[in-house]
Image 1 (cartoon, helix red, strand yellow):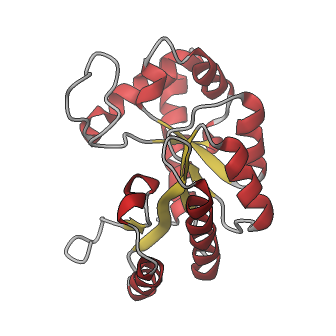
Image 2: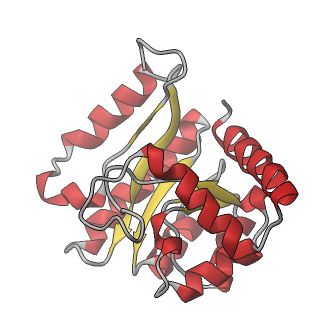
Image 3: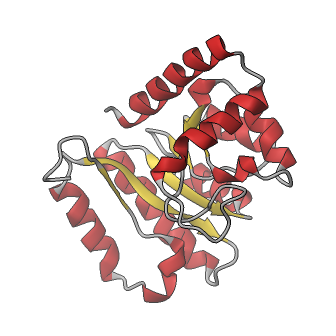
Length: 207
């Protein structure tokens, strides 16, 4: 990011690495974020993952991220896995002031509307290319562009048909095409929708 003007960063402690966590890491994260504010556009990825032990510690770390994002007036990038209820509880205790992205959203319309009401956009990526994700596909298809952020989660979460391969930002157009198909957009509508998605993302991250 220091070498390329069009590159920005987000910083956070991901639940996947909880086993490596030390209390000093929170102070280090805060120091890093404060020192790189000119390049920092979000705090995260952070969140709560039910597949990982010690939910209490995850919640404590997550709420630190929320407070840091509020302090620096930045949005959050939120990781979830079978944990919408725990994230909602954390939001009630420590309300995010600058919204963010619910990364790789997978959930119901009710859950989507809760996040939208609290200033969050839903991250849309490879999951919508899988037929089995009918609930998420139907939710995303019903939402306006202003509530969505197109993402890849590179190098993870490959699109359907690319399982076992490294995912890259080059797959973004394929995700966009799938999203347009789910929303049943015409060619003219696709152009408008593309611009709306771009503006939605730019507004959230202030870029």
